[in-house]
Amino acid sequence: MISISASLPSPDRSLGSVSSGFFPRTEHGSPARFSLSKPSWIVKTESNVRREIHKKPEPPCVVCYGSGRTDCRNCQGKGRTNCVHLAMLPKGEWPKWCKVCGGSGLGYCNRCLGTGEYRDTMGFHFMKMDTTAS
View (cartoon, rainbow, N blue to C red):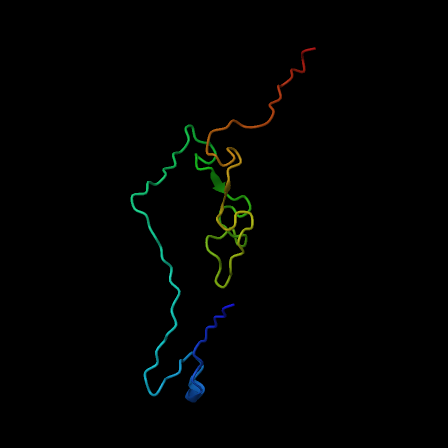
């Protein structure tokens, strides 16, 4: 079994009260070198990738106009639940994010169920009965 251990340079105790930060040891008066490697992310991008174009359905929903999203009913589209009637929060006030929409201020359209397509109203239509007829 192979054991690998990493050791970091310890702070130089000869600096006194200045050693509150991280300082590597100096060897025989040589300048301090940082031998720690920073983590880096390699991002690969692709060129000539076709972007999918989302077309609005025809005919679009009359409530969301084909987007499939509407303002959240809990936070009125603000994304926060405190001081919803104000455009900006008062000084020193932190937002309490809406748990229904996750702070986005958007929810699925109830009419088209988020598809953006036109749908008739759902439910029953009762016929009016004439009370004069027997």
